[in-house]
Image (cartoon, rainbow, N blue to C red; front, side, top):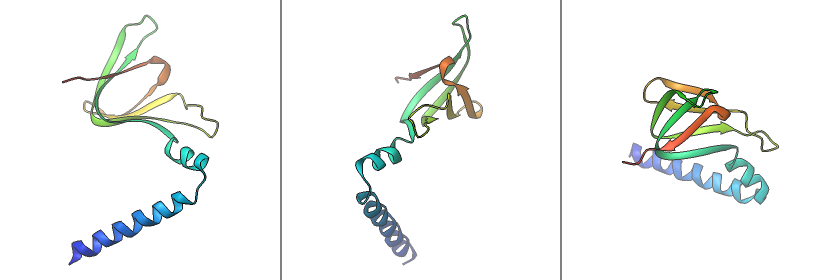
Length: 104
């Protein structure tokens, strides 16, 4: 009985979200969904590169995402944010990073 009530609440919240979204202009919807650049659900290797082009440090992201914040003009903040297997939360400058998908 508790699970049924919980599922009904989730459905109501989802329905409310859809109604609000339907009332938004296409530009507003794009702004909502593109507030952050996301690479979702993939295994990734993130590498920090020195001036010489040599990889200084690498991290692994399993079934996760790499995010960068965008401001209202669409400019990126200059940093990637992600949760790595090796060290947890990481923030690195975009200009010095290589993001590669790990193919299994």
